[in-house]
Image 1 (cartoon, rainbow, N blue to C red):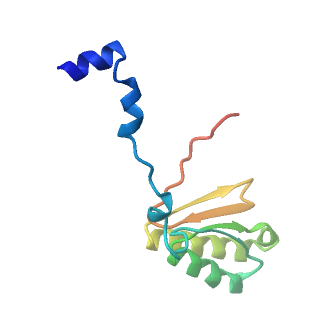
Image 2: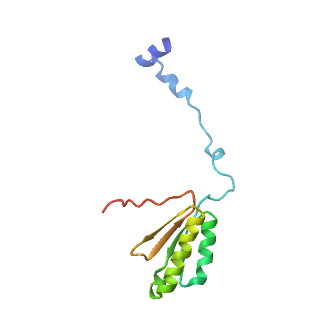
Image 3: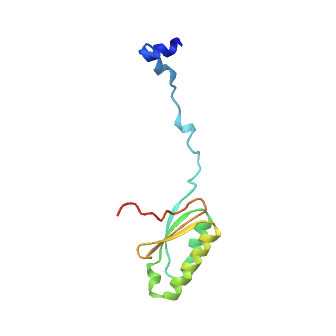
Amino acid sequence: MVKIIDTLLGKSASHADDEYMELDLASYEEHGGGPALLVKIATISDLKDTPRVKDEVYSGNIVIVDISRLKMDKISYERVLKDLKEVAKDVNGDIIGLGDQRYVVLTPMSVKISRDKIGG
């Protein structure tokens, strides 16, 4: 009870600094481990580029894919999108097209993409 009154009246303010201790943040940081999640950038020009993108998503990374070069060939474009959608479904991840379908973002299971836009 005395401590509470002293604290309210400001008498124990000088002891407040003594109650804190310095922490060595290095002991809380990761030691030698890399990041758990990476954001990778890829370009798909044709079907043969798709397996590398799939491998990255299966490894748990987010991949931003430039598919603008496929726009000229509608059959390849649709086939690649179908493959990427299947990968997102396989890993229980997410997929979304950006920039008039110029880019596709694929995410692993632990990451979902919000469809709500921020700003105008």
